[in-house]
Image 1 (cartoon, helix red, strand yellow):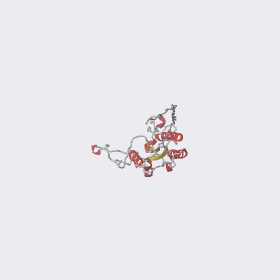
Image 2: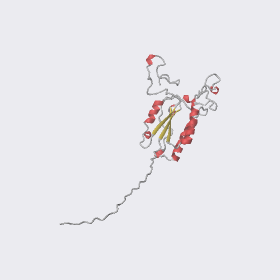
Image 3: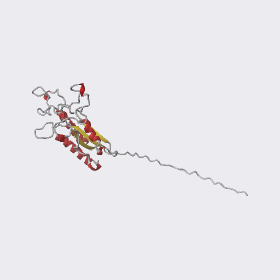
Image 4: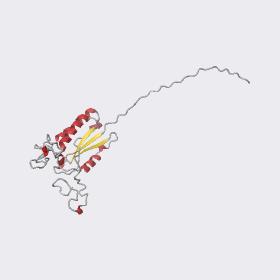
Length: 226
């Protein structure tokens, strides 16, 4: 009933592990960048109205349709915006999927207080984000902005109308192409000041308190309707 066991010595088995570290960086997709540009009439006013070159012969300040500013000596809000955006779009046009909207709506005439109703330059088609497509779209935006003149005697487009900012932002905020899950969605507002008209909210103040208490429009033919 007895058994004998012989135990042979065994050399220990060495187990080794090799670790390789690699850095993986995810490249985010290019954002959607919609420029909302104020092309209201006040954009033709001087940036610095105290400059001697911005004064008219009658002692007033240039910037009206009858007495436009010479932007070579009296830069206007519009000429400065054009210069800044040209530099940006020429040098950085491939950083985003860039589009353009204007306000007030240029289709509603020179006295318009109407908000944006259409895009001047849509975002690049087919979800494109290659450099060639992005630069091409940025150039379209640049050319549209440069085509709007500070003043014109040849029927070229110029900044006119009121400043319906809130409704124009609402229009862009509801655009389906700016509801993307694949891209960050950005609206960049370029304006010279506060809004001064809203067709859907004509009287936000208590007009019963006296003249001048209602919301006003800087356009002479708007009366107290905006």
